[in-house]
Length: 182
Image (tube, rainbow, N blue to C red; front, side, top):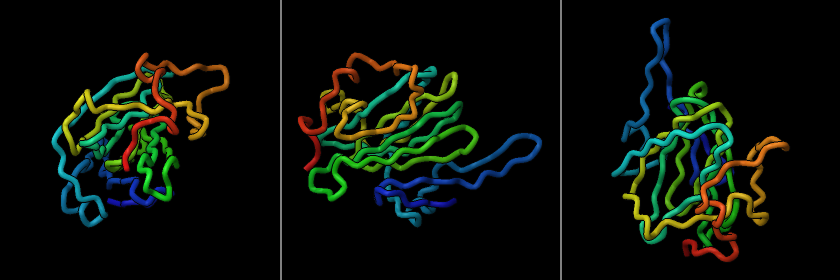
């Protein structure tokens, strides 16, 4: 298993060892001691699974007071996945990192507490699974607008397309006005 640094040092790309043959493949998606050795010491309390169709954009979500760390991966399809540093005290506040996650590349992304998270579906459909370090608390959930010009995220959305977002995500706050982490 390889743990690859990104432009945001706390955000880590995980490349698992994939063992395949004519029957299919096997890989470890979580191994506490290997992840600890790779710099990710997390205790997970909740697993989630979402399915979305092409053109859906979810995010940028985060949770106040009990921030969630998320280990995310795609089991079917392809997404462009994004993490944004939402810690005002960080020298990288407002910076983002994005990567394609797919059932083919088998990569995972560690999005630590203190970061917003979102993804855009590139394939016909995508099954997205993630492990969380805190329970979901709807009263603490917040959203930064996916197209906030202060962030300038390149979602790789085709020029002729408009992403489909939930009403909640469409009404997300601008970063400069949002409640974020200290």
